[in-house]
Length: 51
Image (cartoon, rainbow, N blue to C red; front, side, top):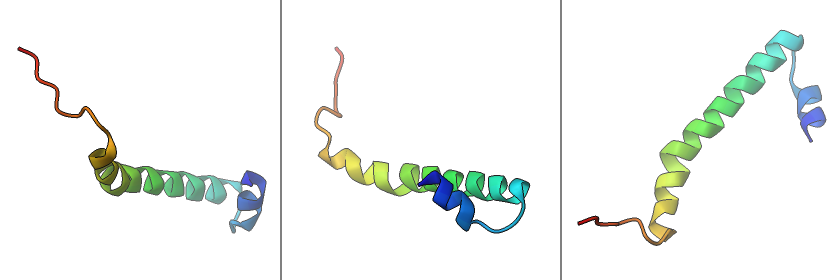
């Protein structure tokens, strides 16, 4: 899969590497801003009180 993605990207090696880094950063950003906050409603035990 990664080899196919690498072959699909245009440009020389440096441009491909920067593109993949940007794509990975975008995916991580989307996970932290959209997916993880949405998924917290389904995870039990989020409100813990220590007395």
